[in-house]
Length: 440
Image (cartoon, rainbow, N blue to C red):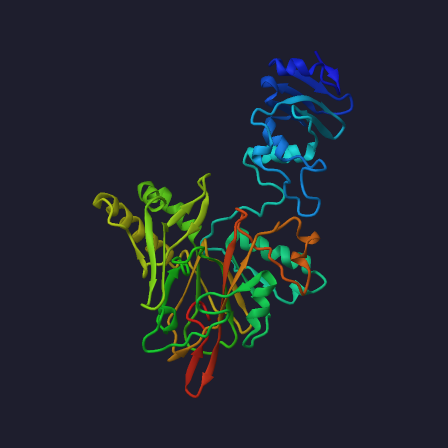
């Protein structure tokens, strides 16, 4: 029996009977089921069953959360394990609930509807756009004006940058200052710079015994950077100050597209590469960094979390030879696909350009160049993700002159950035390159 806006009997709910409530001017209906353990809720033609503890932990009633930081003011053991819903009703816009411990809470229909959409796998309003795999044919490099990020239309420019980053895994900032140290300002626009074992900023020069192949003039195949770090750098900032050396064009390729193609071509190899832990090692004797993880790291829902591909420093475990047969077959297929000109975009950065690359998805490289010395001041940026996209106009992420930690991983985890400062300066008849990765 229905009574508009009021539960007929809390005792009925406790006894396990269903109790239905609705409101005469609302399309919402709520039903207590399971002896008060759950509420079935329907609004706008969509329904869902909410757990009593799920509702309770989302209560914003005074005393439940801190009014400033929105963190809960209680621990899990402070709430009864067998918490029940004793009554509920619906108003024009809210679901009202009372729990067996006497706590009252209200939930906006819109918030519940958003939770239902998220449970169904839909992208929420605060989620960035879904990644779109791409290949070279017909693809145009996304370019965002650095001046635009600070002008009257900075919100539009910020959204354009974030949209390109999340959809395609990279974009190019055009028009930054083409001078040493300018990358500090660029990186700080997106997050707080944090030091590594290389320092806050570090100069890399081509030397007879380089600590990394990037610090030589040889061509570099498609790779992700520093997979031996935990966490792995999330974004690469590649800054060109002067570009007058022959060669050294940038190459960019979408790892996500290659991974999906591998799954279609050789699902067995895809399964092994996404489960077999690989050792990634940086070892110069005095400095050792080691991490172990699958080459293709997936989220619980099967989507890509991180792609680690650096074939000069990866070491498979001594697994069953049959497993390694599949591993090396898949690794070889990816190496060919990722360096296929049909997949790669090759371009030349102008002075003042900054290539901003998702190091967990997109691979970069470079063609060989004519140089005997090279330098690369670099910085790392750590930040905790913020709401990245649709709320950009209401948060400091779009405020000129302030740190803007807006380019985030969708898992709300700490993401590490690496800012690689690339430049070339003529020295007599030689060239100094400020980084061996895409400095062109």
